[in-house]
Image (cartoon, rainbow, N blue to C red; front, side):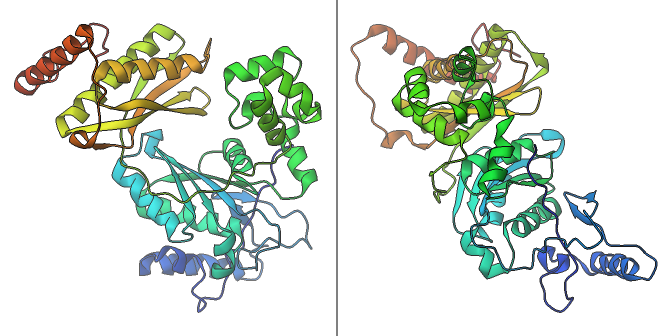
Length: 405
């Protein structure tokens, strides 16, 4: 069973300022066309109004059925967590400036926004629902419309009672649409029951294979398993977390944060890549480019994030804290390889890989552990010479032999 689809009533009083015009602050020409459309829908014989979600028509369930109105007061216990995935034109990666503007757009509705670079965010709208007089679905629709009208960015939004369910709802939604999971336990169980184990947030390919080897290949079966069994299979902490996630429980709060200064790069393969060696070469290329850019700007990174995009448009993101702030190419490459190996990808069809250097700070403010290792000292001196050669003759003057391009 899929998540319940939310519908919206966009017929509001023109003087109330809560309609589509007020939401988007559209020009007068757009407002006139919208008013003409509403007037034609209200003419006798025009037929019943059709509520839409994500610009797709949704038929009313019955003649007497009421459409959920975004102007209604929020229900007690209703879902309030939004997971928003931003998608550029043609799934192109978002620029840092555009991403920052989209985070500011979310902050217009609620201060409880957790940035998840490079293209996602969590938002807790429980406090904003009463202020705006809309439920979470209504706020999500406004976010979707404003992001598309102001920035040309589509939003896929999942709505649920906690971050884990909201992420899964967004994964189940078609691009550019809103999908909600009702808060009732029966609805949550039905939404999760038939999903594969790997669909749970935090369950990577290696953990999913371990669960499947014990016959726990669906979320419903994981939820039905005794907690002690999962703890014996996965370990005490991981087993308890997986058991709770399989039952729709996620106590993790949405933590407000500013989007940390970061620097990223992405490599798109010309076709779905199955070869692990070519993926490693792409990671080497990205790590070398990131290190060169950071050293050129006098920056070092405290953490490195790997994002893998698959052929089915799903993504996996992993972050590793570096042992010390660095812009050293070999250190970044080693961390990228470790993140990639930890995913345990076998025959995965990979569309693109991306690296993002997180927590940037000035190089002169970072500490570096002195090492009496001639090899490390030689590698850093060679790297400095390479930077000088690139500054004089261009980026292609000197590069690793395995680098793509």
